[in-house]
Length: 415
Image 1 (cartoon, one colour):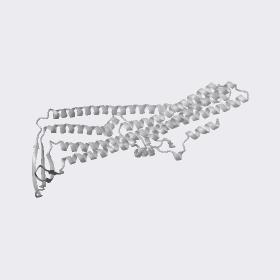
Image 2 (tube, rainbow, N blue to C red; image 1 turned 180 degrees about the vertical axis):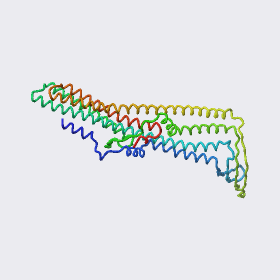
Image 3 (cartoon, rainbow, N blue to C red; image 1 turned 135 degrees about the horizontal axis):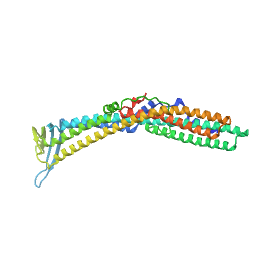
Image 4 (cartoon, rainbow, N blue to C red; image 1 turned 180 degrees about the horizontal axis):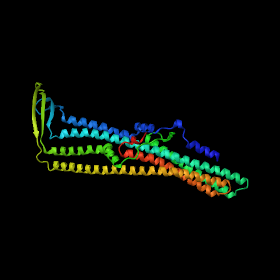
């Protein structure tokens, strides 16, 4: 029995020197998580798209050349060479190019906001996984304490049995309960190990790493739920990104409408060419302004405008749905936190009452006035009360983190 308890203690009780703080876990995740890194690359893509959009409005220069040889019956071979340099600049595109540039600029802002949201989502996931690991550790310690209590009862009953003052059935029952408690401890420890593996996965480190966690403090007290909803509308990076996507949708409509407008461009060119008969190269210069207007395209432009308008309507519906989802997140987290704070007070009192019940049952049994069942029931009640209290403590921390994440900044709940 002592060997088994010692083994469990070595597994369950973390070495403080090797403990990783929540802030350290968050920093490692922010540096290593591949999903976050992938989201960050979207900013680079958007910046390159902006360069392409700006280049489309600027001067374009191309160089072309040709060489040919011809021979017909009764004549000598004739060769010719020519080259031409051409520069073109769009003077007016119906504002299509300008809108493309503006949309590309908005895309950079959208990518940055989505990266900020992804960062906060990752911080939230790490904090939640960390709290889960802490709760599993605390539950394991409660099970271990219960096991130790039952082992002590078994030891006392064994002594009384040897003295002939207790029946063997009491000793057997005590041994069975101690064995059951050992299984509870083993199961809760396994859950703790799994939660550490989940945390390591989010941090993008080897799940076999010998991680340990340490207690954390959380803040964010209950205020007015309406204030939290307002905070979410102002702070949520994903909602701010949705607003920019609406602006992009409006620009898409304008770009489609540009198909009904004329385009004007300027062009200059210089050429050089000659033939083998004299190889007398001559050059020419040209320049001018041209305009084009697509009067009829079979309804393509009209369809493109309708597609852009429908896409914008869908964006508005998506934004409305996202706002409703965020509001639900805020209200749910708020109510869960409110209930958890109430549970924290009631479970703390329940632990005190259960400890008193266990003390009375133990003393009565020692005095020969009680029965073993009273002790076992008291131990079960105490273990249940302690686990409920552990659950309430970590629910408070968990729902504070939920509420902070719902309003757009998980770090608000972390001290």
